[in-house]
Image (cartoon, rainbow, N blue to C red):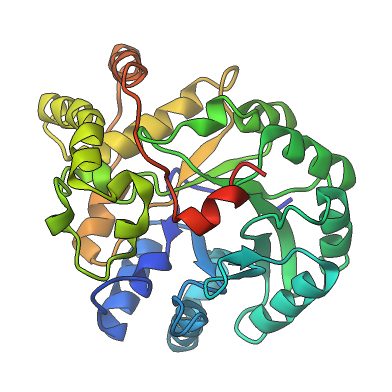
Length: 327
């Protein structure tokens, strides 16, 4: 099992999957800043370039590693694959997994491979059996799963008891792993949880108050939770909880949202180890996310009691991808 170190990782998706492109050097500067700040876990994807150029994120990261080869040994890299943005469908057949791994191998070696979603056709036992054949060849060094339920984690563990982590959406806004068995399974089996979208797709920063706060081609407009001004206004109630605590702690809302996730790790009897992987497209934002703001037990309880009273309205993903969640 590959060990994930540090309280916070870095998600690379928004360097390329974004409404307004940023320069390649700006991307490199942010990655360098992450390394210099002690981040060791970096998450990319075979499809993170978007529909027009799915491999764009891997191309960018490959070029970064060629320019700064001295940083590669400091990184644990995970790559999501076996998924198409064009069709919005995963393919976890033996052929689909092999095709994805062979493609990723053109860009990286020594990485953790992760099917982005289960395809609801092939049992997880077969998926893990087929994936395990690729581990140990100097290219794939570990395996993980994403957006699965707790029973699937336990079934996968029986076949391959060396899962590096389970990656799921987890934030103050999205807490499904506490009810679908993932937290319990990962806690019991000592499998870390990697929390993507820990800032609720940027919503928990308080910067999104209506549809006009999104660019016209921002993919978040297609998420059910952000699909109308009415839903955004309704869901903003949970942001107000974060804003109030941020004012009390004299820090940013993002730091509260991330501190809330890290706080879970102080209660190993209740929660699995959880590592947030916020994205950032500027050095300033990256350093903001990495600054550790600690919550007291009372503050943690206060946030929990308030957010439990708030129901988030609307689906959390693009409609075509919803059925592959909690597989």
